[in-house]
Figure 1 (cartoon, rainbow, N blue to C red):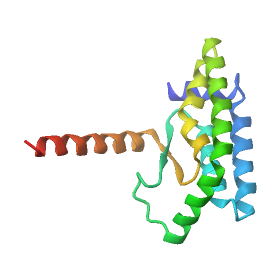
Figure 2 (figure 1 turned 135 degrees about the vertical axis):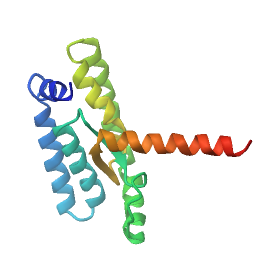
Figure 3 (figure 1 turned 120 degrees about the vertical axis):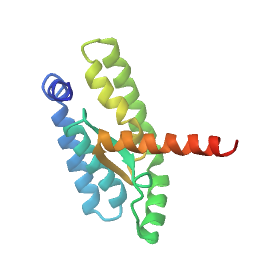
Length: 153
């Protein structure tokens, strides 16, 4: 099913074009060094857009990835400066999602765009991982909530 979704994403909807554009734009921003945190996130989004069914975007903080404190502080500043642009890109993507859902045949493409809305808004410190990794992260988070509530009895 994932393979069929990826095929539908690429050929009728030219998803590979979106993936290439996003990856190259991220590479360009990374080369500028100043916008590297955004560029690295957009490159990860480009990887996600190549195989959107079977992958997911997660925050590096959820993955417990250790980062340099200076890089983390700089990424936060860049994230704040990027916010107005991210808001614009997210709104454009929301309108695309609505339009694609209304066309019925565009529902697979709408699902891909809907999964990536959070990354359009804030690509800083995002990572493309297999869906199984994201599912396991969500399971562990839910287990933590359950243990917290059961431990209070």
